Length: 448
Image 1: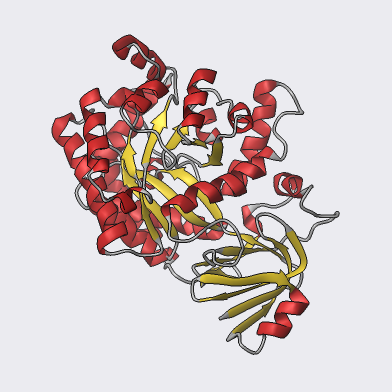
Image 2 (image 1 turned 30 degrees about the horizontal axis):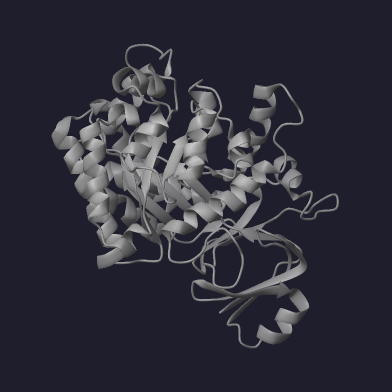
C-alpha cells in the first residue's frame, strides 16, 4: 500500500498539481489532489513518499521490439556494407537469429531490460526469432522479463525462410506460449501475441495454417491475443505481393484473416490510402518505428493520415532501443524533415506515445497499462524534471520533445514494485548480466 504525493502528476490524460497516487499490490486505487489523498490514505499506506514536485507519469510502453538485436551492437558484418533493406536482412538479421542458442536468447533480453528500467519503460511488446532454438525460446525471454519484473507481450515470428518444418515449429511455439499465458499459467506480467515475420516471407499455405491455429483457440483466449507482423517495411513487400499474388500486401493479409482489432502491423511504410482504409475497417493497429526506418533508409510511413482516418497508431523501436523518450523525439523531428514542413507532427507524437500505446498494449493484458487511473496496473515513473516554464496538458508534448529525457527518470515502478529507486536498479544484477552477455556474445559472433 503506497502513497505517492506532492507530485507534478500527469495521468496520461490530464495534469493534477499537486497530485497524488495511491496503489495496493499491483493496482491503482485512486488518483487525485495531493491534499485530499494524503488525508484519506496516509494512515492506511505502509509506504508514503513526498515527491517534492517531481513529475509522476505512466511507465513507458514499447509496442514493437526485438530483444535479440542486442547482439548486433558493434558487430562486424561479413560481405561488406549492406546497400539496401534486403541486404540488411540477409547479411545481418537472418544470420544473427540463426546463431542464437537458448541462453543467448535470455541474456539478450536481460541486457535490454536493464536499459528499459533505466529509461522508465515498463511494458515491452517483443517479436522474437531464433530458427535453431525455437521450442521454448519464449520461455527464455519470459524468465528474463519476470526476473526484471517488467511487463511483456511476447511472440515468435513465423516465416518460410527456414523451410516448412521451421514454419510449423514457429506456429507451435506461438500457440504453446499463448496457452501458457492465457490458460495454463496466467501471470499479470505476461501477455502473448502470434508472430509472423512479414507477408513476403510467408506463403499462402503458411498464412492459412497460422489463421487456423489461432481460430482453434478458445474464443475468450482469441480476445486477448492477435497477430504481430511487419508490413510493407520496404518496397520489397508490396512488390512481391503484386508480382506473385496479384493483390496488395494489406489486401492479402485481410484475405487470410490476419487483420483484426488485436493485430499489430509494424511499419506500414509502403501502404496506400486504399490499404489504410482496410486497416481502419478491420480495426487493426499500426506501430511506427521511425529510428529503425531511418537506419534502414526505407522512408517513413504516413502515420498522420492514418491517425486522421481514425486508425490507432502507437510507437515501437524495432529493437533499436528501449528509450521511448528518444523514439518520441525522433518521431517529432523526422517527419518535419521528411515533409520539409515545420508544421508537421506536433501533439500527435504524444498521442502515439501515450494514448496509442496504452490502448493497443492493454488489449493483451488483464488490466490497463499506460494510464494512471483507478483499476489500471500500478506502472509509473518518477521523473526529475523541473519545468522552467508553465506546464499543462496543452503544452506537455513540447516539454517532452525539448525537455524530458530518459536520463531524468529517477525511479521506475511496475505492478506496484520498485524496479529502480533513485537510479538504483533493485530487481537485476547489472554487473553479472553484462559480464555473462559479453561472454555469450563471443559464441554468437563466431556462429554468425
